[in-house]
Length: 354
Ligand code: 13P
Ligand code: SF4
Image (tube, rainbow, N blue to C red; front, top):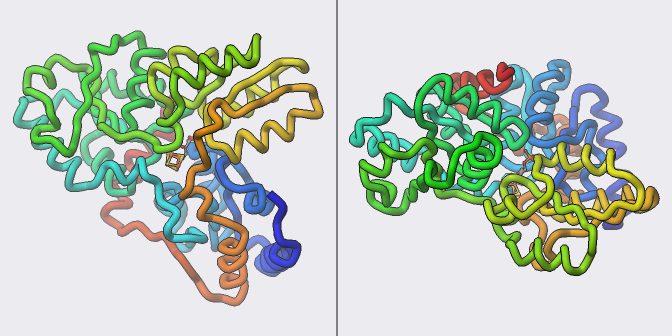
């Protein structure tokens, strides 16, 4: 999208004034007008590491969503301040698992007599509270690029996994990458008594999947895959593992945003691709690779942007950078010390995965 030249100049000037004091991180789903000011771009795993690798930056401006800014705060030093340009940039998936609901779930598992065998594995897309719960109960965090390694590790620690909060990433990884069957998985619904499961069902399951999903990726359907194959003969279908299992099962390739970018970089000229992930990224990739003769289309035209990712726009970024340049700290994301300690434990287990 074209960006206002005046705002572009103001963002540039504020960034220049701040110099090394500011480090701007941009998730791949951010708007073009914002991504142009990112010092690094990446998926949530890469950005978590990049934030931690910049101790000299006093301000980390996180162009992404709330849980990512929390993770950056947890992994960076106390003297580093993480700023989210719009505090309303949340994530509907992360909001699907609250601390109270997860504590209640643990009680249900305890009553079924299985809590001791269960290792929690939480997707990066979760609040700091959920990460802390995970750390406290001996579990790890994972992202879409290391979910299999996280599950391999978890099944070395215990017999069962409680996977939070994205049922699709959990199911897809278990079935596609770990050779489990759909029957090995049950879905825990936090809105039903006992998660809607009997103690017998819980005892028989290997994967207990939290009933959460991404409101963007959850909308791609098997019809979208079938339609695009009909429309574009020879198309390669490449989707994010937050998509439903039937979509992932029908796709040719599955991977995180970083994986998607690398696959397209390596693709030969003349190849055709339908991509099932957020629209800002797909559009950017389509424009970037068109001159190389790679045809890239969005998997389903009825699916739209991630509305919360899109809340970070150039006016908000300019406001945050100019405030910082004037010495006013705005929109700081700060996780309390106790939550941080346990969440960090879980994040560090992830960073230590082989
Ligand atoms: P990744 O960046 O880990 O692929 O996650 C996708 C996503 O939905 C982030 O909100
Ligand atoms: Fe959350 Fe989905 Fe948006 Fe990512 S794309 S921030 S998982 S709602």
